[in-house]
Length: 507
Image (cartoon, rainbow, N blue to C red):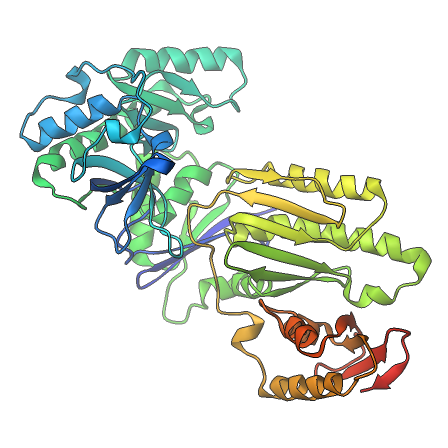
């Protein structure tokens, strides 16, 4: 098996794909021209309090105010405010020399700040739709093996490091070298690393804080004091290990900067970085079939190997994923339960994959094919729960409802990735004609309260898309209950009309 990290840069857009034995398992893209990014540390300005939410709006220079909740304040907020005021007034005292104490008996955000007060904030979630950036005053500077916490306290070790002796070794190292008034989170990558590598990275992170310290007196509101390295470095920092076979880039500047980064972190594996460049070079994502997989996973309709398919819909408040049997809907009654469960299980694996690939967050509702067997339902819930344990985003999975609906909540820090590839971007003109013929056929069935319409799965997806869908509009307009049934033998421009007793009415 081969593991490759592909990084492509096209002007200000950086695209990153992780390919495991030819299969796309991670995708990310970042627009370098965006003014703000996650983890930026900025000087903000309090503009309004929201007492009912114990929150405040903060001006950070974006077109929408950032949102700061009381729960996202530093445990040493008063000391942090004092530090910022001193630095803005030219005081050169370092954080390490300050006396700071944990806050006690303060439960309202307006007790810490006043209107137009300047504060240090960090972006923890990007601006999404109409909502501004989510902010925090719990500052952090992330490295490959650790996360430095200014105005923090103590040594916290990843639970994934389970060896007791190794935990004690790491704690002893950091207890000796950690500066006063800083906390540290030790990441899994630090396990079994030499002390000199650990000390080197800690020194680098402390120097980044010193750079922030020096910038504060010269900076105004909305000034970015600290920005993480570009997306490719964040992915390398979080994912890179000796199991990678290749890092392949298509830009000479990327090659040089990543090569420097690998030297800086003293990465042990040699000759891992490759430059895919040249006049006659095939597009990097085409060569490794990433574009082909993106078209599949980012489509609105996603086929399954069992013959079923998913329909992924985005509404104002949530994502809805509909699981369909497809060509297996014609299976005999004795095999239907088995095929329904197989399709549901394959859909579960596919959904867990696309949630991560497309960075889908918020509320997700999955409409599974209805199965009566409780064991089948339990298996779906347990499988989804296990699959999402590997997800870096925080997720919660609820058991299936009586209607075979599953609800998932997944934290979102960025806008879901969208690729202009779905059905509604390229609707053939002839589909509008079939829509008109179908509505005409429905409107003439005055004596039937229920209609069953057989269509190709692609046409069914088009007719049920959006809210309100064409199906819902027709049901309300003509006061009929309409059921779409899939018939794989029909062309995308054909349909068959039946009454409630499956008597043919026309086509």
